[in-house]
Amino acid sequence: MKGVVTSAKLVGIDKAINTRFNQGRTRVPNFVGRLCTRIVSTNAKEAYGWINNIPGLDKDSAEVIKQSLEMTGHEITNSEFDKAITIPRTAVEDDAYGMFANVAEEFGSKGAQRPDTELISKLLASFTTLKAWTGKALFATDHALSKSVTHNNKGTKKLSAANFQTGYAVIRNAKDGAGDPLFTMADPSKVFLVVDPDYEATADSIVRMDTLSTGGRNPNYNKAQVIVIPGLGHSWFILDNSATVGGLIFQDRLPLSITANFNLTSEDVLKYKQFAWYARSRFAIGAGRPEYAYGSTGADAA
Image 1 (spheres, one colour):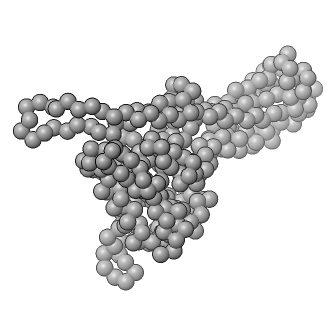
Image 2 (cartoon, rainbow, N blue to C red):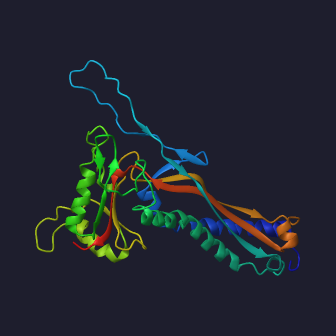
Image 3 (cartoon, rainbow, N blue to C red):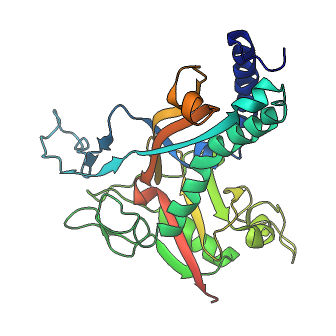
């Protein structure tokens, strides 16, 4: 009935808002799900102890030789993301709230996409401020994996078949702090070539074409899956997620949820004359193991 705000009416609106919000949540690219190792977080921040030197078995040895393990502190702090949509009390009184269902669906979509937009900013910062456990940027020329082993996973050249092969070889030949091979690229379906839309055609020609334009077999065919992310500019990346922990970490503290406030005696309703639905999530995206990632700024044409 118009002019009257009842609990039953508010419950019905809440159900519609939640339904459309959850429908919107399904419309996401889910770059994070494909490119990052998901870690369930239980604290405000998580500390990762990276094992640099894992002892192997010596040939003909009767027992495993004891060896000290170097642990390097590396913390990733969760961030909180929240937003609210409101429906004026007058809209509820006048039964003029149907349009807010569309708003709720878009609200759910935007909220679910937030990790992907955060990933874009982290990739752009991966050559500068996004630090790996080595203390260097995720993509750097001088990662010290141990006192005797260094690692260079940064390039500067634009995407091409030859430059892709260079980056691919960096990950393929990666070693741990003890100098032992990491046996990377274990699952080609989890190796990704990440590019800006302007380089999609180039990426496709490198890894999606089974034959070369000049004839003959393409040696890079199916070596990586192409993922196109807007906003990357000239930079491009190769990420190997076939390991337990790859080059990027998605630290999931609190999945996206929506909470309603339609208490008729609350301050929002009494003072501001509006009902609110709050969406909230807590997560972080950080650097994982640089040995499983290669990035190029694409600044140089050669």
